[in-house]
Image (cartoon, rainbow, N blue to C red):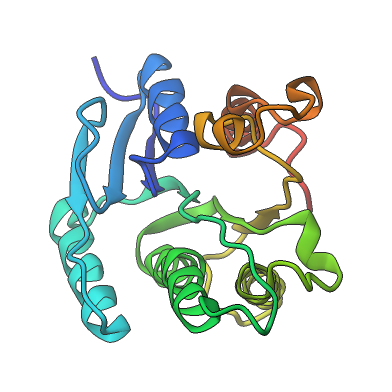
Length: 217
């Protein structure tokens, strides 16, 4: 049976990424996961090589995705890679955290954006993962806020004219407050989990947007 559609999930091994892989696969989609490790549920995997060089990592992923897809286009690219780190400007871990946040959020979003210019269908969807907190200052999590702020700026640029994205496509950033992931439950055991965003809701929302249903303009 032919696949109903094709999607790349960047960060496909993480909590949200795994949910997206499962959700789209259950609806007969061809799903490729891009991450530091394979996701066995995916139709195909691109394993990202760990490196301190952004151009090196970007070229590796771009080349492998190109080899995987060939001339085939995808309906959507979902960049759900990311992570969290706290700390003010005087934290001993500031430099390390800034480096980590940049790698997890900005590198992945930038690579996803370039992949979209090459492999996304006209009218397709690119999603990036921002953060509600980064709409204002984040003194207690400097590195995280700075990286997410950069993702917001990138998405606004991509949504403008002549950004390089295919005709009729959409670049949309999701700005969650707190996602209901095992890691977040473990780090905040006393929180009200009911107020958090379920991962399946995000996956379902992406699925609707790809189909053009309630897609933000």
